[in-house]
Length: 78
Image (cartoon, one colour):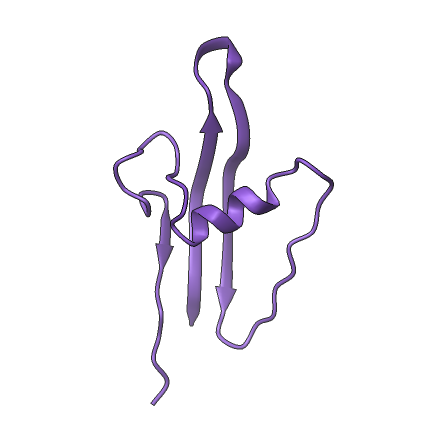
């Protein structure tokens, strides 16, 4: 079962011609017991992804709901 499910995750900065897309239509699942590493070149959106997952940044285009495109489910093991 999935602990974290990201569906159509988007994060943009700025507006108009100055818009920069940090995350574009990202989809992934992290299952129970999986170890995940996030790798990429400088400026590829690693910190942005972690900030959105931690609800420190809003997703785009909905700045009102931190988890508008990201569904996080914590499953308690009994």
